[in-house]
Image (cartoon, rainbow, N blue to C red; front, side, top):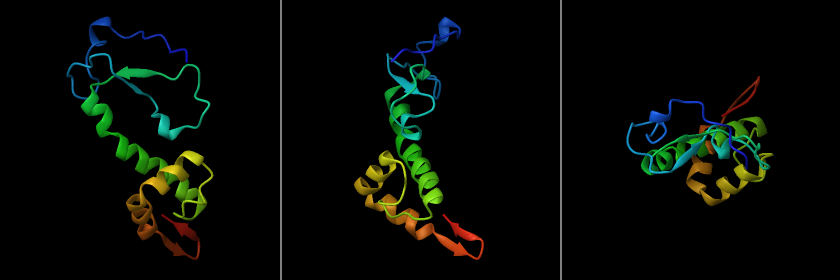
Length: 113
């Protein structure tokens, strides 16, 4: 995957963009890969991020991706979202699937999640 050239101030390249700590060579994709489908763009941007910050956002990113896909599908059933990645997340994380299913509400205008 070809990365977008980093035109930032080179003094900032070794610091985590989230907490200011040392990134020590770890990177975070922007947008997160969970929000887009393969094949990923050749020029998916990355930013320096420490491992704790990079890992800490994963559950929130998965929740957001699943929330959007389930809302579009009108169901939190793992078989209904169009995105295969989301279906796999819902199958692997039944607690997330149950959380989204419990948040579902229906009214005359349609389904809300």
